[in-house]
Length: 412
Image (cartoon, rainbow, N blue to C red):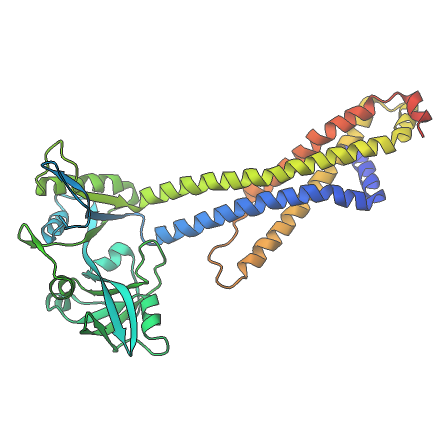
């Protein structure tokens, strides 16, 4: 129970010099706030970005035309697609690709959309009904195309949320006419918000057959219509690498690539992007936390400075305690506990203020992500504060134990 006695003595000293104690704790408070808010900001940004990507499906694979080197000539990506509807049919074979759950082709181009004298330049994407489950799209209002409408090249349109708001700011878009490349289309649906990173908010969706044959004049390659990209989903997140291997093997065989030839396509998966983003944001979060930790270091030096002043002011008190039989360990613990109380109390205040700031930021309209301050951060902040109290309070406490009681009693 000796520690409680030191604790009471420390509190008495702190309350006897309130202003000095507050100014001393200020460095620790600011340091803890700096660490919590910067790391919380980094974690919040990471959660927001990864959440948007994960919402599109972590099992999703995107196959796009890539640079091919054929007979010494480099074919630039996007100059002419090497992906065709025949490739889509081959990848859809469940026997050859048991770990590929769904396949959805897309043909993309840019076009001017006109509705009620409002012009908007947007990306127009031709798709099939399989695109909804593959890319986790959901229809907020209306409906999506049927297979029969796709086969019949029906002039129907499904709008992304942003496009719908731009073209029809004050009216219901369902049933309205939108001219795409001067051809009339009837709006039958509006998608739910999909977010960034290739989402459909800024896109207009048409049947695949219409995009290929009417709007953008898709070329034929090996007798099949080309597509600008193919989206696929693996049977599970664990099977994504296996599904990629299955698709790559099939496309290389279909495209007649030899063992030494580079792929004329790219297979991109969301899981790899998530890993990359987590690694990058993790490094940035550590960097931000290190910057905030400098404030804690400055606060700790302030603690040492004030404790040295306290030792000097209480020299006579220390001499009296020694003269009455106090051991060096008693003097050491007295000043060490006082330093510890100051830093831990400052840490607790810093945590409280950080939580308050995080809550206030979360109330700002339009702020896209929250500051994530977890229990692990709080425990770490308090532990580091306590460590600062011990490290920076140890030297002043040891200096107090070295005072000669006779000289200390004479001190004025």
